[in-house]
Image 1 (cartoon, rainbow, N blue to C red):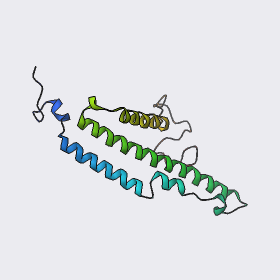
Image 2 (image 1 turned 90 degrees about the vertical axis):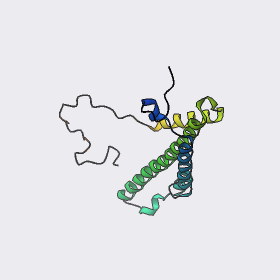
Image 3 (image 1 turned 60 degrees about the vertical axis):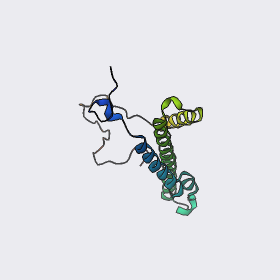
Image 4 (image 1 turned 45 degrees about the vertical axis):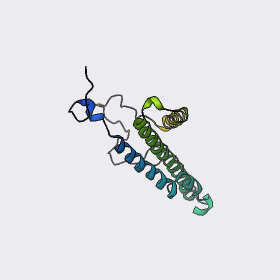
Length: 154
């Protein structure tokens, strides 16, 4: 059986991508990563942006609540920035590997992708399916019911 040629209408031809296109895509991904690293959304810069609890005032519970909410949002933004950088890096590596061929994967790239995957799995929580989607909510908040905050207040 002869191999299908790119662009001949077969399902395999849909996956064929010229090397030049992959390299252009990798350049775009690398530029995005560089932009992220130089922006206020960079992981290192977000980590530096802290507000002390005293900045909200002292002696009343609302100030402490606001400080706690800020700390929680700040921690999530820091994690999100790190994860976005990891995903952009992984995308760049995999595009490069797809262009060069997977049989040419060196140990360093393989280990880097594995580390990114492990970190992503730690922070990714799969949504839990409803046990009985036909049952009434029973007081439990559902998406789209007007309640946008979770149990942690955000």
